[in-house]
Amino acid sequence: DKKEVDLAVQSAKAAFKIWRKKSGMERSRILLEAARIIRERKDEIATVETINNGKSVFEARLDIDTSWQCLEYYAGLAASMGGEHVQLPGGSFGYTRREPLGVCVGIGAWNYPFQIASWKSAPALACGNAMVFKPSPFTPVSTLLLAEIYTEAGVPPGLFNVVQGGAATGQFLCQHRDVAKVSFTGSVPTGKKIMELASKGVKPVTLELGGKSPLIIFSDCDIENAVRGAMMANFLTQGEVCCNGTRVFVQREILDKFTEEVVKQTKKIKIGDPLEEDTRMGPLINRSHLQHVLGFIEQAKNEGAKVLCGGDLCVPEDPKLKDGYYMTPCVLGNCKDGMTCVKEEIFGPVMSILSFDTEAEVLERANDTNFGLAAGVFTRDIQRAHRVVAELQAGVCYINNYNVSPVELPFGGYKMSGFGRENGRVTIEYYSQLKTICVEMGDVESVF
Ligand SMILES: NC(=O)C1=CN([C@@H]2O[C@H](COP(=O)(O)OP(=O)(O)OC[C@H]3O[C@@H](n4cnc5c(N)ncnc54)[C@H](O)[C@@H]3O)[C@@H](O)[C@H]2O)C=CC1
Ligand SMILES: NCCCC(=O)O
Image 1 (cartoon, helix red, strand yellow):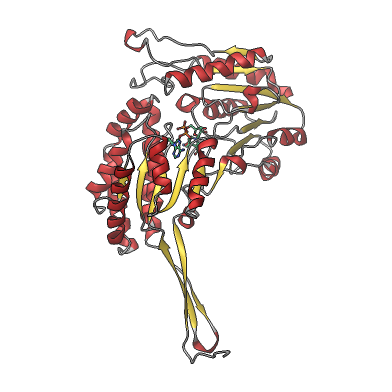
Image 2: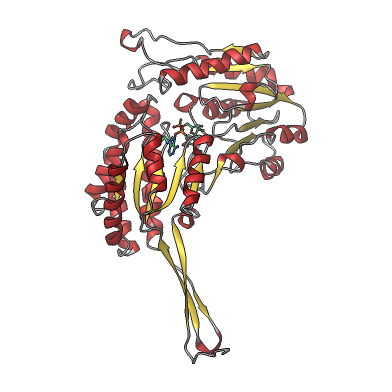
């Protein structure tokens, strides 16, 4: 509630006073230690994440890897953050200091709980800020491990605080007068509300919102790679991934061959207990979301799409899984641009295949959306690859791959998919502010 949110912010504020005085090297050392502990406890954290979210433990381990890598990356940058020196006339000069913002708030979605908390806290802390983080109430657990690890690594108590709760808790955080910035990952409607709340206090926001990203497959591609890319673009974390390439545009000459192969591979995905080593798809996040995703498939059928595989409730053989929120991954054929399954974010394991003839046509159609998070292109023609990505209205573009997450590269959207970036060097600018100092070496030349 409001009182607990205030306690968390006040404790973060106290920790900030200590942390902001530390040198970049000192912060770096502590972040590196936290990264080391995450690496050491990777299997345990991944297991907790699987129980938390339902994704396969195999995949959860990859999330934990991109989490400690993010801490290492910003630890590497912490010591080199600085300003510049500018010579002015008459021996005067100016310089700039890159300073932290204060207590930052992170609000996360349920699909990548530990990774989201790491991607927000690592640059925040590296820049000298404190963070109060609110995970989704559907996945409250793993973020607490991150808080324990930061404490064990040596951050001042309260520097990274976790508060639990839903929309009301999030609102208290965004409105708190001692909060300097809000970084949010979640849906577009919530993102708009957060922007509105933050605007009352003129607080900067970073918004990582939803998507309906295009994946364009030209007939000159390496088809096996393109099929693998399409699977990566649609079926990680039960399809509950913001940057998924769910509109798969395939050039007509290879449509049948590509579709046949992608359906064959989709049918092979092992669904079941996500804690088992060979499982590659676990249950969706909750029953209402499962019904929501299945509803999209019904609507797609009514609108003329053809279910080429999956799209059904799935009851795994293991009796202990019988009430799980499982469904079979779905490939929809005969999709058209105006269909709901092609226009709206489903956030489930549903791939829509569309055909196209020319580069100009597919670019027009790919960009015809209010979202702009990611996009992908598969082709062997290097000129075409770069020409196409230059025209795509998306914050993250992949050439001949999809859904890899190197933390060295910025991640974030265009259009209604949000603004600001996570990861990469540029994110330093979203967690710091520049102070200009103007130094006079002569006498004041007053105009009065
Ligand atoms: N671009 C990106 O990086 C990502 C975007 N997403 C998007 O998130 C959505 C799914 O995640 P959900 O957790 O269902 O999103 P959501 O928007 O319902 O909730 C996200 C977080 O915001 C909190 N929240 C809800 N209402 C709030 C309010 N009025 N004020 C402050 N906080 C509030 C929730 O408790 C949760 O922690 C999808 O649309 C997906 O595309 C998800 C993951 C990554
Ligand atoms: N690994 C990419 C994160 C995408 C998401 O948060 O949905």
